[in-house]
View 1: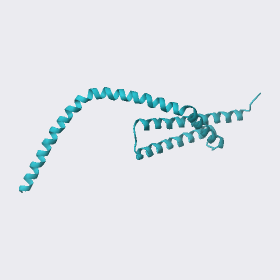
View 2 (view 1 turned 120 degrees about the horizontal axis):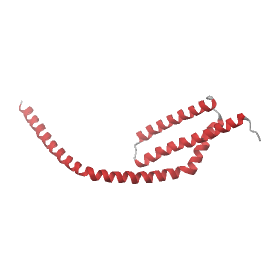
View 3 (view 1 turned 30 degrees about the vertical axis):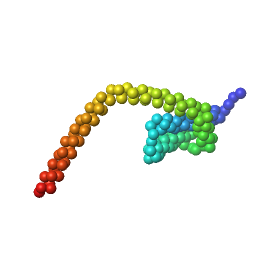
View 4 (view 1 turned 90 degrees about the vertical axis):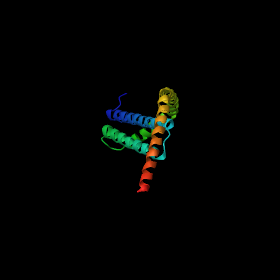
Length: 150
């Protein structure tokens, strides 16, 4: 059975849009992993989401421009949604759980190593800081006294 060339091109375009949808959701999962590892405030969450949606917009525009000469086709947008849905249902939970688990262990291990080496430095730094704060307070008091005598 012979399939016409235009139908095979449209099928490839649909496949590309499904893969792009999966890639965009994977990118959002990376963002979700970072948010679980490093807590963010509302401002940074909004800024990250804005950057994410700008990347999505650019990616979809480039896909439509390269694959379909910039024409927006309903099945291309449907392919994006199907790709996102497939990724969410099949891989998203696994990717997030495994990455968060691995990264928490790695970062915890690195934190222990850095803490071991930096603890003596931080204790010495605190002593030096206290010394300079005492000296600064004495200097400020002397300046105040001399200004009051004027």
